[in-house]
Structures are given as C-alpha cells and as structure tokens.
Amino acid sequence: MFGNSKSNRDGQLVVDALIGNQVVIRGDVEFSGGLYVEGRIHGKVIAQEGASAATLTVAEHGVIEGEIRAHVVVISGRLDGDVHATEKVELTPSARVNGNVHYQVVEMNAGAQLNGRLIHASAPVAALPAPDSTEDGDGKADTAARRKLAEAMA
Image (cartoon, rainbow, N blue to C red):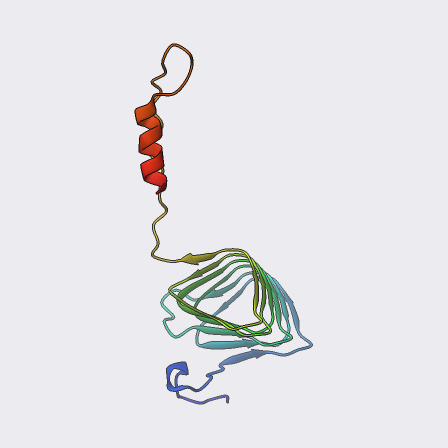
C-alpha cells in the first residue's frame, strides 16, 4: 500500500499519508498525493495547488469537519462541510455528508446520505432577468414583464 507507484487510475489505492483511527487533528491539512483518513480532522483538507493526482479517501470511521478541496475525493465516513473535487467524487454506501458537493463526475452508491446539494462544477448559475418597473395605474406589474419572467423560468 505505501510506496506503491501505481496511480489510482490503475485501480490501485495510492496512500502517501495515513491519519490513523486514533488521531485527531485540529487545524487545516494541506496534502499532495494520496491521503487516507481513518481518524478525525477538525479543519479544512486541501490539496496543494498543482497537485493533479491529489486523492483524499475518508475511511468508514473517518470524520472531517471542514471543507475539502482535492482532485479525487472518496468518502466512506462522515463529512460536515463542502466538497470541491476537480475530477471525481465517490460516495460509498456508508458515506454521510452534510454539505454541498461540487463535482465534475459523481458516483453515489445506494445507501450514501447527502444533506446538501450536488453542484456540477461547470454548470453556470442561471440568473433571472431584472424585472421591469413598469406599472400601470392600479399597481399591477406590466404583463410583458411577467411573460419574460415565465419564459426565463421555463
């Protein structure tokens, strides 16, 4: 497991650092390569800038209370915070996520729990057009403005 030069894409889990099940970290963690969390982290877990192979794996009994930013994220444990993955997020059946998941590709297995939103990373936020301030004499908005709003929402 340690020292293995195969990448995660070859079907092998690469672990460069392990946070054991009795370890508690209070503070932010910055990493590159593979980080495997069996313990508890109270803080952000962020891959170093330019670390394209950064993979974070949260084991079944692992807990992270904070934001996650990495290339690939696999969650089997608990996360209280948002996930930002530039490539892929995998939620296994035992995953418990309280936060939003920002992803390019998501794999969510039956049994995984997500209390938040799935947000595709390249999805633009649709903005509604500004309402017309044209009102007629009885205070009702112009019907053309209502029609525009209905078309934008469709």
